[in-house]
Structure formats: structure tokens, C-alpha cells
Length: 418
Image (cartoon, rainbow, N blue to C red; front, top):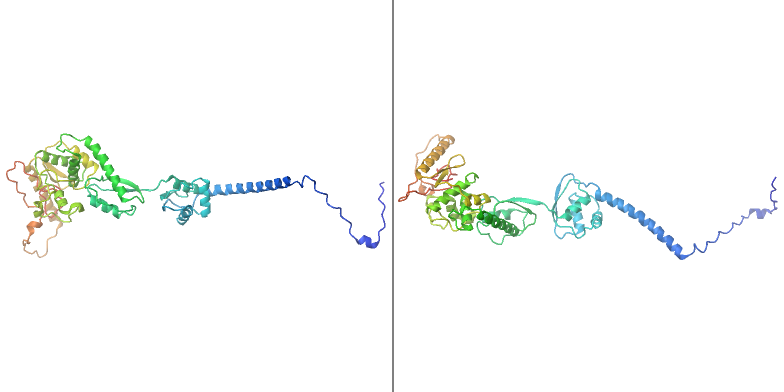
């Protein structure tokens, strides 16, 4: 049995006093070393930084990869000279991103795209992530707007169309020379200057004209690419049907070979209104013989220049016209034309068209309840676009076709052409 330590009797006062706690052990000299203290501090800071970096990486990855708020594809314009904060504000306002602007800026830095953000109009896909949004702006693949320039417009009309289109900027310094623009469908980004558009249309026309001129039929009486464009512009204005262009071109080429006047109504109109393109009314009888450098009822051969900007198809048809002997054509009442080699055959086709149009007019116009007696209006002869019966020209074995381009008028049947 172990012995207990003897109990030392204490006075009541001494019993009330607390026992003395032994002093803490002294720190070792190693723990008090300043290098150890600094090392511990650095280690602690590194641990904190690693935890922060991990959290930042996780949050950043989530922010970059998470689907965006867009519910459908959307086109947004990033203005020129916009900074990263401005771009973030635009994207937030348009609903493309829903993160803090500083998160967007951080994403730009993380993807090393600070100097690669390009202004322009971009199409952002549905639910595009922040990474996708930044990549779209960096790639610079801006939205391309399709612009169609119809065949047969004058240069002034084309410039007017470009001026009315708000995707272009700037103004055209001068109207391009007639026939130097190629009608076609082009694609341009928003903000393209109108002068740049004109330059592109001119370059396309030069390229296409050179290709077609190299493949032309050298038997035609056309001596230069400019003459090809001039005749093609007349063909363009005479017919819009693809299956008729080469045959219409053949009529004019045959007339040039036989030194016959071309007699094309569109040339009369161009001589009257120039680049405006449209007359807005029927041609008057007096205007058929009105002197003009472009009036092919008066002048011999081709006019001094194009009357419009012909398209590729008309240029190709004119460079390689059909092999026919046709000298005349007139509307057939079905949207096409009837072609003939002689004036007598042509006159029969004209009479047939008149009869058809007269029948249509009788079927569509209701008789008046109380018809008034007919009276000749003063100057009526000058306002009718054609004569009732075209007189044969004197001293010509093959008289000219008469007027072209008049078949669109139903109230006064044409002598010749559309």
C-alpha cells in the first residue's frame, strides 16, 4: 500500500491564498530567430494567396463558361473608339452579359485580348458565354449586310439608293460615269463609306467586263469594251427576260451591221431626263424626232455612251448575241416579244398586239350610262406615244422597226417593241 504524502498543516489565511502557477516555459532560441518568423509569415501568406487564387480561378471559370442571358440571337453595335468599360456597358445594356463590368474587363485580361477588341456590328448567339462574347469581338467577324443593286439603274439612281441606306456613312463626292457600276448583290459591314461602295462596284464592273470582252464573238461590229457596255445598256432596258436577251441583242447587232437606226425608246427617255432614268409619262410623238445625242431614232449607230448600268447577263448576251437575221421585235402580249426578219411580218405582229390590247380594254372598261360625243383634244397628236398605223419609211428596202419600249402602255398600242 502506497504511502500518501504527509499533509502539512496550513493556517486558515494561507489556505485562502491561491497556489502559485509555474511560469511558462521559455521559447527556444530557434523559435525566436527572425528568419523563422519571416518564413512562417511568408508561408501563411502563400497559403492565403493559393486559397484566393483557387477561388478566383473557380469563379472566373464559371463566369467565362456559364451560359449568358440572351434568349435569342442578337445583333449589337460596338462603337468605334469604345474602351473596355464602354464595351461592357453596351453589352450589359443590350442583355448580352449579366456580369459586373469589372468581371468582363477581368475576362478580357485573362484571355489576353486587351488590344484585340474591334469595333463593329456583331451577331451574338443565344446564351453566348462571356468567353464566346469576347471571342466574337476579337475575331472581328462583323455582320455583313446584303445590298442588291438592280440591273438597269442609272448611276444617279444607284447613288440615290446608297444615300437612302443608313448602314453606309459619308457622301459620294461625284456621280460615277454611266455604265461603270456593276449591278449585283454585295455584302458590306455597317459603317462602310459610300465612296468605298462605289469603288467596289466599279472594280467589279472592270473585272467582269474584261472577262466578257475576252470571250466575245469577234464578228460583232462592236469595236471596244465601251461600245459593248453602251449596247448592253440598251438591251438591259429593252427586256428583263433571260431567254430573250441574246435575241434582242442580235436585233441591234444586225441593225448595226446594216447601218440601220437602232430606234430604241429607252434612248429617247435618257436623252430627255438623263441620269434620273424615268420619264414618268408616255413618250410624245414630237419627242420621237426631237434631236438628242442619245435619240437613236435620229442618230446613226450607238449613242455616245451607256444609258444605264447593265448587269452581267446583258453584257454576256451582247458580247455573244444569238445567230439570227431578226431586225424587228414587238411585245407579244404575254410578257415576251415576237421577233421577225421583215417589216411586213412585224406589221402583222403589231396588228395582232393591238387587237389583243383592244379586246382587253373592251373587257375591262364598262360603258358609260350617257356617252358623250367624241371630240378631238387640242394637241392630242403630240401626247399620243405612237401613231395608229406606222408609216413605212421612204426609199428603204428594210424600214426601221419603229418605236421600242412602248409595249408597257395599254391605252395606246405600240408600233414596235416593249
